[in-house]
Structure formats: structure tokens, C-alpha cells
Image (cartoon, rainbow, N blue to C red; front, top):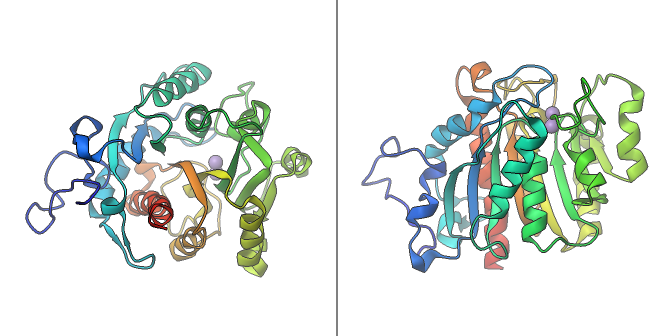
Length: 322
Ligand code: MN
Ligand code: MN
């Protein structure tokens, strides 16, 4: 029996029915045989943490709509993802658009309380990148508050380790600084990949460097990226790892719908190849963030984001099968 009950696309068209991520069942519709659920996908329709263009609050709906054409069988990994994993859509977390810190506390608390904390992993669809803090906190708590924090693989044009912007410490430029300070993640087991300039100042790199974050800039990736990624994977081995994917690491020529765009960057294909190279990673949580539907006229950014979420689930499916 497949672990996830899906409508048969040869009988029920992909464009029909209520909109859930990849047509996975709603949390409340999952049958007892398919519990405990392996991964819950949920939206965080929140963008009050942005420093430039707002609009990512509309991304969970856009990504869900785009995801209806995400099919089940992963060709390169040779695995049927929803047949291998029990997957469901938990809807959207409650948000507080006028209160950045209270918003993160509320989302973290709601996500922490989702069913079967020791078993069920959480994949958040942003929203701006500030929401990563909330899902990191929930994941850390659900994994039993591992001492030293979780390992992290972070895709982004930015390091997101700024102390404060406009006197606000909980915006989308700061989630990993707060997560490091709070012990949710281990900076020495964190990889940030895709950094691009220009920066506001050379000192923007200081915090990550001092804490021992491994940074592979977009330019470095083109020289010896796969080897550097492999070295990092060897260094963290089987540690529990959170994958956070800011869509702005993709060249805006491929993913224009984002709030703080940076020219250059990974093509869609390069990003998929990097994600697929993470085979064997022990993924315990993740997010895909910073999609801005209003700047995404052909829907290609949301469509890519939906597939990136699927790639993260596929990595988990391989580990389940192995
Ligand atoms: Mn970011
Ligand atoms: Mn970014």
C-alpha cells in the first residue's frame, strides 16, 4: 500500500479539487494506516520581516497551486516519494503580521504542537526567511532539543546573519543569527551556499566567519563546488540536519518572483543537481522561502519552489528506503 493516499491523475485531473501541496491529503484526512505521518507540509503566509519588496505572504497559496503538477515518481533517485513516505498538508500556521517576534513565537508553538513530534518532520513554505527561525525552533524541540543544535544546509544569496535592520532583530536578514544565539543550530555544522555580492559592507561576513559557518559563494561554487559540498557532508556525517532554501539563490532570470533579488546565481538545473547531491543527508526539517508571486508573472518561481520542496522530500524518501 502506498504511504500517501493520492487522487489518481489518470482518473481525477491535476487541475481539479481543493488546493493542497502536491495534492497530498489534508492532515485531518490522513487515514489511520498512514499515521504517524512522515512529513507535514505547512504554509506561513507572512512577510512583515522583509527589507525590500513585500508580497511573500501570498507564496504558500501560489506554491500549492503550482505544486499540483509535481508528480510522484522521482526519475533520478528512482523512487516514488509519496508511496514511500506518508505526506500531508497541515494548512497554514497562524500569523501575526504586525508583530515579528510574536509571529515567530506563535508559528513555532503551533508547529511544535503538530501531531507525533518524535516522528513527524516539518516542511514550511514561506513567507519571508524570518519564518525559518520558527520552523527551526519547532524542529529542534520536536527532535528533543539536541545539545549543540541542528546541522544546517542553507541555500541563499545572503547569509541572513545581520544583527538588526531598522532596529528590528527578527526580520528576514537575521534568522540564523538568532538561531545560533539560541543554540538551535550549530554554526560549525552549517553550510551556506550561493552567497552573491554586492554586500552592504565587508563586515557583513564577520559574524558567520567568527562562528565557523562554512560559506560557499556562488563564484566559489563554480570553481570546486561539488568537492566543497562533499567535504561538508563528510564533516557532518549522520547528524540531524535542517535544509533551508531561499529561492533568491537562483538567478532571477530563472526565478524572478522574489523580494531581494541578486543577479547571477544558480540555474534551476544547477540547484536541482546540488539538492540531488545531498543524498544520504539525515534531513529532519526544512523550508522553502522568499517566493513573491506578484513579481512572478509566468508562475515559474512558485513552480520551481514546489519542485525544490519535492526534492527535499525525495532525499528523505531515499533515506527511508535505505
Ligand atoms: Mn534568506
Ligand atoms: Mn536571500
